Image 1 (tube, one colour):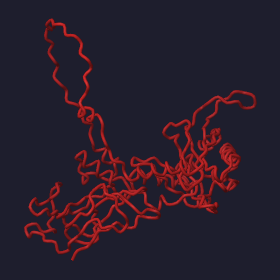
Image 2 (image 1 turned 60 degrees about the vertical axis):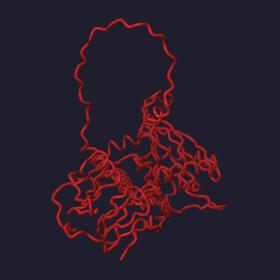
Image 3 (image 1 turned 90 degrees about the vertical axis):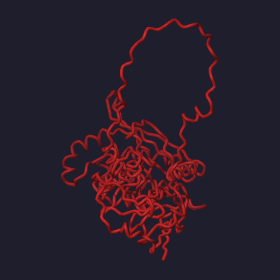
Image 4 (image 1 turned 45 degrees about the horizontal axis):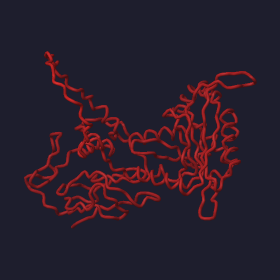
Length: 419
């Protein structure tokens, strides 16, 4: 009896995927649940497991192929012939894969590796044995950082000193015209890398945002001194009580919520000729990952405390690092906050995250001289940017929204009243 391994449901609004790395070959023996292939979606990588026990008889889509939900990826034959000299239940005692070169039968190891797709690709490229690495990711999964820690710097071998020899007079040779490098030489200086599905989707969505929205950006600056002072005074007590640090993100989420309630069109979207005003607040937090930008969402952020928001942000960061973000983590969102300041950005114009009509960009905090009560003083200042869809958000609303965020951040106690 044969069984198809098909592309599973991939989450809301995700209908296609790209076949990533195959972990089996035709002739390999698999058990139910064994990971056979990675699928790349525009949001996360998905591991697809065997749906039956047997032998892989066909692989229908090679790596790099685009597939849709329900497409068959491979065929498993439950009655596949396994040579008697190599029973599948035979234990493996070495770290190298046990594969019979004649029958192409794979003898499964007693324990299956648990690693993220990025970690597996890095380990394969560097010749690292994943079974010898203790994973630090969720559920003990091996992450790319675990693999990187095992890779020793490969220094260049030292060359013996070159003995100098007396130079002889050389005849004069007239200079030649610059040679034209052959095509092959020029090609060796370039590398062609296929974009991942996530990178392609990011590119398409950003171009879509610029082509479909009347996007405009307004700027302001915030004196972060009061927030920084409060964090300094309350940090130890906050950590002792909640087990998480009090960061800047929770303050900006709270300030954004106050501004969204005052200017509800920033928490809306356009559907045809209608404006859909959202009566809930799902705030996306943009995170830069190696595989591309991801935006996990804090659900019903207006109902959550500072501590609850900080815990979610901490968990999102950990999941992003080890590649364990789920599709549910990334679904939806009514407004987005992105922080280029963590990379040192001083000023930028963030691009909308469709179908949202607003995105708040945060930047680096720098001490700058400013005028207060007629005197020049040093303050910790941050530039902020609000990009918005001018089709339903007027300039007046956008400017006042950003002023509201500024007022709440410069008077943190007011955030308690907004909450």
